[in-house]
Each structure stands twice: as structure tokens, then as C-alpha cells.
Length: 483
Image (cartoon, rainbow, N blue to C red; front, side):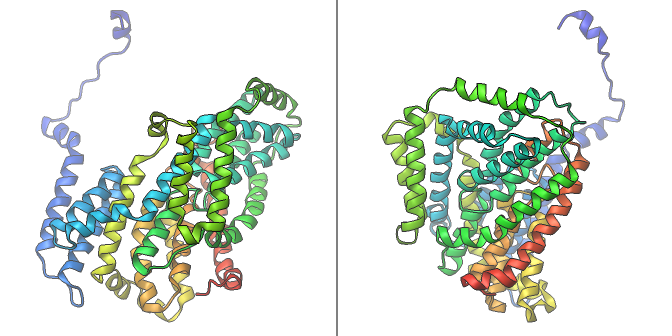
């Protein structure tokens, strides 16, 4: 930068007193120090009636962890690890038991799933599939938007919804550019990016592979009760909500963002050209497709006998055996923060359950809801779907699962129903960009305003919760999931 450029940007002088500047610059550290002081004071107090010393300490630690998760002062994985470290230091659980939580099956399942998803993205097979589907079925504006929507949803059945959104964003941007859609004004541009986001969100709750929340919830269930979900059980329960929601959500999208374009032929030709440029499917893509297909079949047929984690890791090992992926590539794609978060979260949840703190919270907090299990499900699912707009899906599951398992002990609700009632609504964040990366990515396109996302999102969120409650009442009992 030369002197002329420096003169064009005059220096801004902060005229505030030095103490105020220091206070402003160190606000984050002051808050963290304040939390540490409050925690120290609380730990010195006597526990309330009906709560053990260990349970009280785990509850204080739980409260501090929630504060850091919501405030974002520390990364979610670091917060979870800190809570894990504090458990033996506070005498809540012994160190050997605490650190053994990293051996939970859910941790290794999500690691295997990350590697499989990384291979699909890295080899380009998912992008090839996306372009082929859009060219084949997107012949009119409405059918093109519907194809983006359904493609986002169905890819999120077998990949993390975050990965699907990141992968499809450049493809949808290609379409918008080819059609010369104007940012901030084009209704069809808004429709395309909202279809991508909502497709990822809705599809992401359908199976164990759509995001971190499902394996985490299943892992916490198994740790607390010994019960477990098969791949088919989870997917069947979720799809009772997903399938009708896909229809309703697309109708809502068309109401809010009616296409203002007559023809999409230019966009289809552009996509077809890009598809032809990639040529025929290569060795890496074919092997990845076969391994992924074989893994899903094994999950369905053998998952209950061998465990989902073992199959996921065998599938990942097969990719390395055939040299489809390298460890350097995997390191770039795998979200190691989520892996670390799992161990800490499962340890903290186990401490709350083993010390009786979770049951104590339920007894004090749920009041008169005990008499109606349906009301309990309604309240906890509503809390999950609202809370997930503000913090990570996995954090919502980590916060609510210990409480949910405590509720099961006091109300007699089936723990499997409670697990689904927390994990499924926790994935349905539509309203705020911070709620899920899929919405944030769509917002980053420049085609959408905050109001576009919030108003339409609030409508579909309310419908999603009502549809969930209808499934709990009328559909789930038919497949053996009774409250």
C-alpha cells in the first residue's frame, strides 16, 4: 500500500479513556474469569436436598458447559474436553472411567461416516450425480427447483447435511449465474438456494448419516440404558416425518418464492456442458460408489449383529485398501472437533445420569407434567426445535439427553421415544443462519435477505413440530414406538 492510498484512509483515533478501552478489549477474559469465580463459589456451597455432592458438582459443571456452548467463548469441542477433564478433578467420576468414554461406539461410527462422506466428495462422485440429476429432471423452473430440493434431501440421507450443502452450493451458483439471476431480487434465485438449504435440513434427520446428532443421541441412549437403535429402526421412525415434510416444505417454498422465470434451458445447457467436461466415471468414483452401497446394505442387514461402527470402519478401511483416498485428504475433510466433542459430551452425560443429577433436574423442573407423558414429549421436543436455532444440533442433544433419560425414569416413557423426541427436532433449524451451516451457506449466496429465511423458516418450523407430534401420536405406535 503506497502513501497516496494511506492518505485516502485517515486514521481513526479512539478518544475513550484508557480504562474503558482496556475494559472493552478484555471483555472476553473478564467473562471467563467471572464464570470461573462463580463456579468456585457454587462448588463450595452445600448441595440442595435430595442431591448428592457428586451430583451437585456435575450439575454445576453442566451449567458452566451450557454457558460456554451458548456464548461461543470457546469452541464446542474444547468446552466438551474441559468438562471431561473436570469430572475426575472434581471427584465426580474416576479418571479411568471418564476417559474410557472415548471408546464409545458412537465416536467410531461418526469417524467412519466422515471418512465415507469425504471419499464421496473428494472423488467427485457426488458432484457428478448432482449435475446429472439436474440436467435430466430440471426442465422447467419448478422442476429444476424441485430437483435441487430432493437431491439435497436424498444426498443428506447418506452424507452429512453440512457436506451436502457445501458440495451443492457451487453447483446451484453455477445455475444461478448461467440463468443471469439478479442477487437480492430474483425470486427464482431465492427459491433455488432455499430449496438447497431446506432439502439438506429435512433430509439430514432421515438416517444416522445426516449429521452428528443421531449417532450422539444413540450413543447416549446406549450408555444410559443399554438400549440401541438399528439403522432401519431409526430411519423408519424418521422417515415418517421426513416424507410428508418434503411435500409440505416444497409447497411452502413455492408460496413464498414463486418462480419469476419462464425458461431454464440456458442453465440446463451449461450444466450439461460441465457434466460432459468431467468425462466418464473413473476408477476412484466406481470403487467409492460400490463401497458406499455395500456399507449401507450391511448396515441394514447386519447392523444389529455387528454394530454400525464396525461396518463403517470396515467400509473406510476398504477405501484405503483400494487407494481411493489418502490420509492427507481425510484429515482435510473430517471434522475432528466433533470427534473430540463426543467423548467429553458422553462423559458429562454419563456423570449426570450416574450421580442422579439428571433425575433431580427433572423432579424440580417438570412440575405437573408428570401425569401426561404426551405433554412431556411435547415440551422437550419444542425446547429442542427452538434451542437448535441458537446453538449446535449436537450441543442441543448433549444438553437435553441427560434430562430426557431422567424423565424416562420418573414417567415411564420409552427411552427410545425420548431419544427420537430430542434428536429429530434438534435437526430442524430453519430460521437463523447460525442454526445450521446449510442455512448459513444459502444466506452467503447474496440472493436472500434475513427476512426471507426467518419468515418462511418460522412457518415450516411450526409445521415440522406439529407433524412430529402427529407421528408420535398416530404413526410411531404402529411400528412399536409407544410413549
